[in-house]
Length: 357
Image (cartoon, rainbow, N blue to C red; front, side, top):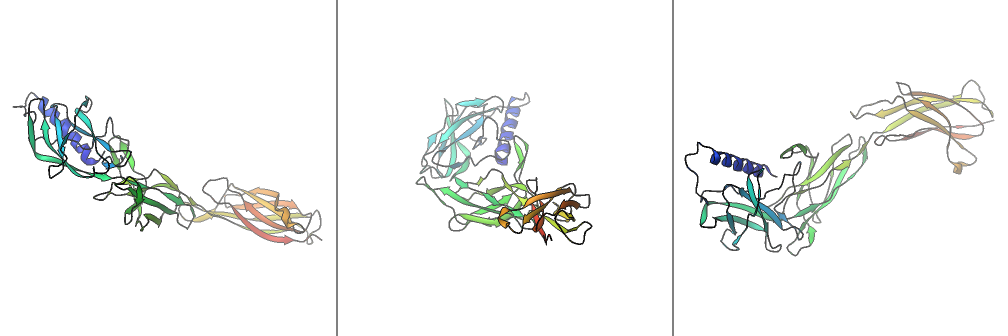
C-alpha cells in the first residue's frame, strides 16, 4: 500500500467518524458530487508487511485490482477514460467492517487497459451524480527484474547484475532499456501499514538489452535488492532479498626449521611457526586468535600424492602458532588455514623444501 493509499484510508476513517458523530449538523447527500474518497488500488484484507507490489501494473496473468469506498454510502462508481470513452461500472459488492470500506474488483482487457482512467460518477439505487473532482489513476504495464550478486574478497567489491523486462501489449516480455535500477538494502518494516525504504547503495541504468551491472560499495556481507522505479507507462518492480557476499581474507606467515639439530635426518624433530592474520569487517587487518593452523608436507619424489597434514596448532591471541613434527623424507612443507566460516577465506603458504640426509 502506498502512502497515498494509506492516507486515503485514514481519510475514509475520519469521514466515517465525523458522519457518525452526534455533533454533525447535517449528513451529506448519498451519492455526493463532492465525494472523492475512493481508494485505488485497495489492498485487502491487510497490506503486505513492508512494501507492496505495484497493484496498478498489469500483466497477461494479472489484470485486476480493487477499488474501495466508505461503507457509509453504498455507491457504484462509473469509470471512464478522460475523453469519456470506455465507460463502465464497478460493483463494490464486498465490505470490511474493520476498515469501514466496501470494495469491488476492476478487471481490464490486457491489450487495451493501460493508461489514465477516472471515477467520474457515483450511483445508488435511486440516483446518479457526476463527481465534481473525478478520482484519476493510471494503469501501466508490469515490469520484471532479476538480480544476481557476484561475491568478492575484501577489498574487492561484489557486483550486482540482472535484466529488466516489461510486458508488451502483445503479452510477451521484452528488454526494458534505459531503466533506472537502484541497488539498496531491503526495506525495513515498521508495521503492516508503514515501512522505511532501505539505503541506496548504487544506481545505474539498463542497456539496450535491459541488462545492468554495477559494483557495490560494501565491505561486509549483507542483503540487497534491485529496485526499479516506474515510468509513465511501466510499473515499478523490485526483487526479493539477495545476499551480497564479501569474503574476509586471511594470510599466513611462517618458518620451518629443525628444532635443535643442525642437519635434518630421518626422524629429526622439526618446528614450524608463524602468524595467522585476518581482515576484520572494519577493513583493518590483525591477528586471528583461537584458530587451527595445519602443517602439511608433500613428498618431493611424488608430488602427485598431494599434501598431508603432519601437525597442527591453535593460534594465540596474537595469531601466533607453533607446531612440532618429524621429518621422514624430502618434502615440500606448507601451512594451511582451512576456514570453518562461511564468509572468511582459507589461506595457504608454502614455506620450504626440507632435504632429509
